Length: 394
Ligand SMILES: Cc1ncc(C[n+]2csc(CCOP(=O)(O)OP(=O)(O)O)c2C)c(N)n1
Image (tube, rainbow, N blue to C red):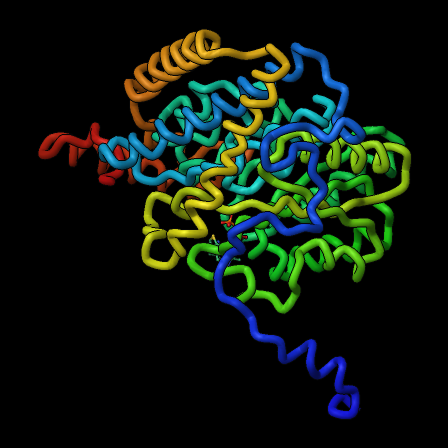
């Protein structure tokens, strides 16, 4: 049957190029053209204050990432995951949300945390896993958690946040609330069971969920074309019965508009949307990775010219909302605030050993009481012979 259908045969045997595309796909929705001029027909009408806040958050994210990588290279923290080049996706989506909406991020969204108002000191305490860390040092670095801001804890297993977001938004719908949920995952995440389960439920139950797929070309070192047969991540929306849109992930205004529209649909009770934000990961997968071993340098250089911060800055400059002096002042201010928070967070001691026993049981079981006593006795004994004040060796 398949062999008789020559058209289909030709399509499925098409040669797959194992590298990220050097230019943006033509099907992507965009507001800014390649000269960073807006298409006035689709340009969102945002206030001056909002535009500047978005630019500020993009810069804050870039500087936070730079500092995170530097701290790791200096051996001061153990691990970091940068989001270089993905600032427009984080800030554009976050700007389109209400503060009461639920956020279920992946590990590559520090800008979403900053946009929602997470404290720099608290985020940095997570990197050290110290006593002021919200999770008392029990999480991996870059796995922030701010439940009071409705920012769900980052989890390492890929795409687990997708089903959690669907569950939260379903709960919101059942309670007749207007809060929606947004969740972020990579192109690799769309090959995970949790992605399929989440989108199946969301499509069937018309949950108010916005799915943000950051297609950054790679899942660690595996190019997108090697881990899925789909040519475009957005095509996956069709199978689950929801609308999908591909956007230029390096155009903060396009990302904002697409998210705004999807959030409005969700709030009107019209169900979920899948947004594929097309970009290229400009840094390593994490501080443990060396992308020069698998990335095409020419493709990287082509995308470097599409830096989302530079593009948005040009847009603001044309509108006379930004200039060199403002840039200098902003960088100075953000760097000073960051340096102050780093200094404070680094001084924090590691969590006390007995905190290991907190937060699971209201009352410790007799076995845990015994284990705690044994552990503290051993700590005291060791303390007589060695310095135990140091954190886990990095
Ligand atoms: C269930 C699961 N499988 C494998 C891994 C190992 N792993 C960590 S990150 C990663 C790549 C994920 O790629 P993608 O979803 O495209 O997101 P990106 O890192 O590019 O942002 C993998 C395979 C994991 N953490 N969880």
